[in-house]
Length: 452
Ligand code: UDX
Image (tube, rainbow, N blue to C red; front, side, top):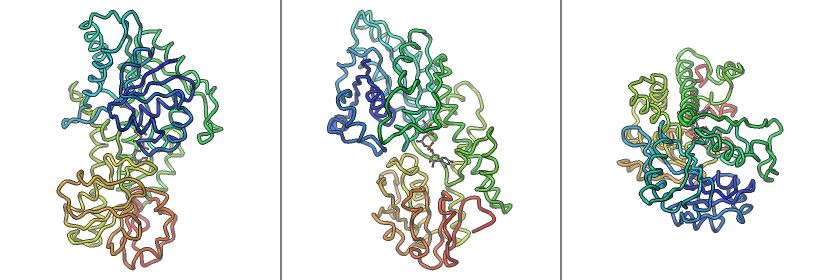
């Protein structure tokens, strides 16, 4: 099938590549000409495993372009543009609206198109998109037939291709049977797993065929927000339990294992730490809260999850203060600028948030990340923060070291020889829990009340 995908960010690009790989012909549209050029050269614009290989494998089925014109020949068109947070916490749908307006210019009369909203959007956006598109087409006197539906994405950065090829479920929200049929046809190789897996992305032996969830658009929109908010609150829950573990002398890692084995709870997303970040949880929890307020509804549990998450940075400061009383003047190394390992994404990164707080309190901060570059502009008034290229240089002279991202690089360090005597090491991800620290290192985990 010939399909179009507007937006080549994480979601748009991975979806384009997966569809191109399983046999569709894909126009991948982006406004950013430099990004498009990179894609044409087979150069991934973001760090994500397998992208480079897949760009190579799909080069005969993928057309990266800035030009909307090719969309006229696509039966199905996805919109996967960003929906950033506005100052009031709502999702900003202006890129989406702009895309719809530009799309209307190129659609042909006497033709039926299926427009799929993949971006995470406020409840009711599908309806608004349909109205906007119909109005634009009417203005141009075109009798084009359009159906709009929702197909949210659940991919994790770092596993974006894996999650696209081997999803837990595919959700489609629409009002019209034909829409479901077209989506079923499009997704068939994934739903039935009939494609030959790329060499670097083998199908897991335990993988089960994913169900196709068909529902109406509002529920599909809600599924996306409710899923992300639930995962965020699951982490906040264990982080709050971690705080209590420290007080009572329990170990949250044991607690997490003990409760996670209950299948009703499940062990994933129960790792206590410095808090959740990234492009989805912070944005989507705020957006869900904004939706609730619009309907005069108190979403207390989601507000609490956000509050607990904000507090996690404070908890690290408290740990430092328990050793030094004052933070001003301390040399602090923060390891990890990406919001999680295996990505170069620093959006809402806990490491960067921590660096900013430490700077504001008068500390001298050195940051390190194996691949992510810190955008110092985001650190506003903080002058005393710099990024160094190697772990030893970052740790040189540090009074306190905080591991903010559980990169393998950090897990594999020889900490005992790397750290000077009496350095305070705060393991913000409990990722060094198995390391045998010598007594000259003061190790603090998160929620590990029974051990330093
Ligand atoms: C998330 C969702 O998992 C994905 O389904 C959705 O489509 C987009 O948002 P992502 O943001 O890529 O994906 O990262 P994820 O792996 O979910 O981690 C989010 C944050 O939670 C990270 O900062 C991570 O470090 C943190 N986290 C995750 C924990 O602190 N503890 C955990 O147990 C799991």
